[in-house]
Length: 306
Image 1: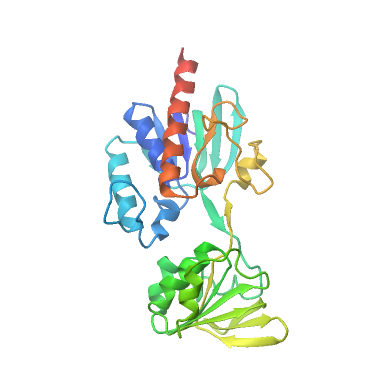
Image 2 (image 1 turned 90 degrees about the vertical axis):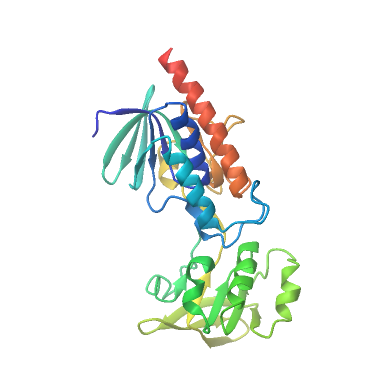
């Protein structure tokens, strides 16, 4: 364990976490960002963002995040790529445990984002990275000219069908038995696209193949095997805050972290921002919450220091 004590530790390096770090580091708060994967979060998967202020022509998600990172790094926060496994509250001091050790801080901002639910069917885990994907923007180019299936009934699934149909030779749209969650206007256009085939009232029961995905098995009024080269599983997004929930951070039934108007959780000195609180689910709302959480954390730390 390091004896170093930070003013704020930010768990998560997406839009909310990076914005929080920009605010705290710029105000000379001793700041650490803990990120388990890549800085930028889910925004890295955004093919094109047209609703972020200041970019009237639109901008690719990864390029927008590059600008976020460049701006944050001007103020020299500590960036550590570590997976957080726990949080302990010792009153005026918080301890964040990772797979690498422990870090101490006067305050914590949770900005862990969301992840996709899984189908949990045979073959899903086996073929991750070998035909099973959860991100059309990330992996779509690998399937140019191939036949693929998109599993999911929400807006993200509909958008990914649009993206993938531009390059794939065939897209099977499988919303499963409950059908699409809303009457999305994009569906009318896609149903007229000869490259897109809708298979409704059927659930995926298996993903199969040898070394790579070769087919899916659907079960509805009958069981059928559909040959595909890839499967994009675009189900509901869920908060990635289960470990912090175990530490005593209150959430709702869906796992969303509960915060007040100042982004503070039920634990003094622990704040949450961005998609993990399930409010907005947009880059612009995440940044707003990140800024508010940072301002609240700074006020809390200054109060501790007297």
